Structure formats: structure tokens, C-alpha cells
Image 1 (cartoon, rainbow, N blue to C red):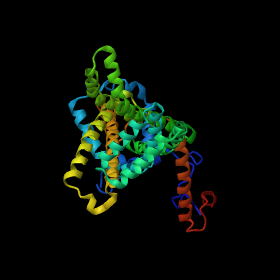
Image 2 (cartoon, rainbow, N blue to C red; image 1 turned 60 degrees about the vertical axis):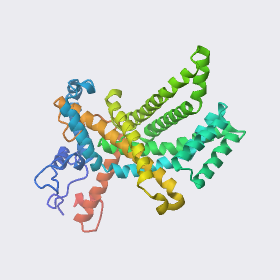
Image 3 (cartoon, helix red, strand yellow; image 1 turned 135 degrees about the vertical axis):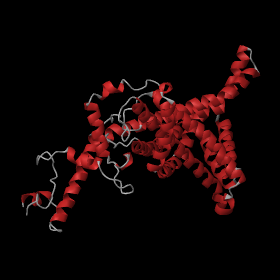
Image 4 (tube, rainbow, N blue to C red; image 1 turned 90 degrees about the vertical axis):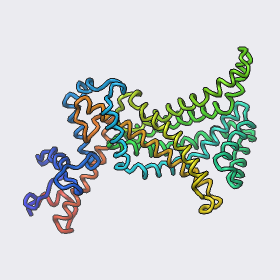
Length: 409
């Protein structure tokens, strides 16, 4: 049997003197079935095509061309900002971010109680056991409108932690559990943001997992800092005010400053996710701050919107009964994750707009270099092996799936 006559393409392009770029050229000119005669949009191009485009850009003097890009978001034109926002809205749907947010919500919920154990244990170590318990109980009461089933569970869990003699052991166990479960959320977010930037994960397990753990630890530390600000900062401000002679004025000033401090902490956490998790070399902190700022502002607005909707329009009690508070909490977490993903989309499209304004051909691919490609290369090689086996199976009508057997005929 002649493999050439049957149209069999060999598995290894280099081994059989086949131009590798032909595969990419074929994929790059793939026609969108919904729009005959037109080249498919960016999301329809295989990741391998985009990887080759990034490689060609780098080989073509990409670093020198990068110098022509606007050095600050303030130097972007109004048209660039408008296009970036419009493209972000479009890509949010194309990347199926609503489905990605559902997965992130699952991992986020798994980390709630372990993180709560770690936070309460930490605050108990600084002698704020009673106040810590009351703070979390009041917070949950506000969120659940005093649902007795939820309140009984929370009071039992938090009370047991704060009254236990071995708070230090609880802290250690809580942090380990929170790090494990929350790292799964960070890992899922890494996969989601890779889809947003249209890049495959190329980092190995040894490279990626320690990084995700480090990000997780940093996020837990930031949440603990925010909790400390809310729980014990008032008395500290009063004490400092008495020492320096400001009295209650210091408390008033701090009460006004507290939301700003919390927003800064949230911005750092979101920027950390945006910068560290994708397998892409980010352009710098100032270029991811836009998405983080939008995410925070929308989170605040969305939280108010969800609360207003639940209070005035929704009737979850009639549908879910005693589970209504849990469903509302899940819905709120889901909205927050969608906002996080939209912020990442906006950052990606802002970088695209930056490249377009500099005359770089980034209409279909954001030309940022990946951090690592070895893992992606291995996965693509395995996939091509399966494709070659499928081709052999088709050409031999089920006799063999070994490409070498077909090639020797």
C-alpha cells in the first residue's frame, strides 16, 4: 500500500522531510463554518498555531518592536481603551468564562471552612478569641439574615476553635488544610487565565505546583491581614490616639481609612493572581492594575446589586427553604469569580490594544512570550501520536493503528 497515494501524512514531519509549517499554515487559514470564506477568529485557531506565531514574532525581533509599545496605560488613546473594553466583553463570552467561574466557585467553597479555621486560630493567638468569635458570627448573620440552621453551625465551629486550648495546633492544621484546598482554586484559576491569554500550560508539575502554593500562602496572609484590620484595628487606633492626644479623632480617621486599606489588600491579592498564575510573561504591574481595579469596583457594585436583588425581588426561601442562605452565598461567590475573570480578560485585551497601537499584528494573537513550553510540547507530541494512530486505523480500515506499519507498506 502506498501511503503517499492514500494521502497519509507521516507522524514525524522532520523524519520524513515534510515542512512543519505547512500544518500551521493549514490551521491558520481554517475557514469558520459560520462565516464561509472568512478566516476564523482568534479563539478558533489551535493553540499550536498561536505558539508558532509567538515564536516567529520573537525570532523577528520582537523585543525591539516591544520598545515601541506605549510605556504607560495613560499613553493609550481613547480608541484603544474603547476597543479593549469592547473586545474584553466579546472574549468573555467566547472563552466561556461563565462556565469557568462555576468551576472556580466549587473550589472556592471547598476552601471556606479550612480558611475560616486558619483565620480564627490566627486571631485567637493574639488574644482576640471572644471578639473574633463575635465578629465572624455577626458577619455570617448579616450575610444569611440570621438563618438559625447556618448560625448554629457557624457558632459551633468558630466557638470550638476559639475556646480550644491548642489554638496553635489548630492554626497549623488550618493553614495546611486551607493551603491545600485553596491551592486547588489557584490551580483552576491558572487554567482559566491560560485560556483567556490563549496559551497552553507549559510548566511542569515541579515548576508550577510550588508557585501555586506560594501564591496560596500569600493570599491567605492577605485575607488574614484584612481580618486583623477589621477585628483589632479599632482598639489599636484608639490606643494610639490616646497616646498622641487625638483621642476619638484617631478612631474616626481609621474608620474612614479602613475601606481604603481593605481595597489595597484586595488589589494586591487580585494582581498576584493575574501576574503569577498564567503561563505568560506579563508586561508589568502597571499593566495588570487596570483589570484588578475594574474587578474590585465591579465586585463592590455587584455585591450591592446581589444584596438588593435578594432583598427586593428574589424569593429563595420559597424555592430552597432552609438552604436559601447557602444558595445566596454560592450565587455571590459565582458572581465574584465572573468578575475576576472579566478583569483578567480586560488586562489581556489592554495588552492587545497596546500592541495594536504600536503597529504590532496582534489582531488574532496576543504576542507575549510564554514562561515555559516544554510541558505543552510534550502534550502536543502525545496528541499528534494519537492523531497518527487514528490516521493509520482509518487507512487500513481497522487492521492496525501503528503508523510505522502503514508507512512501510
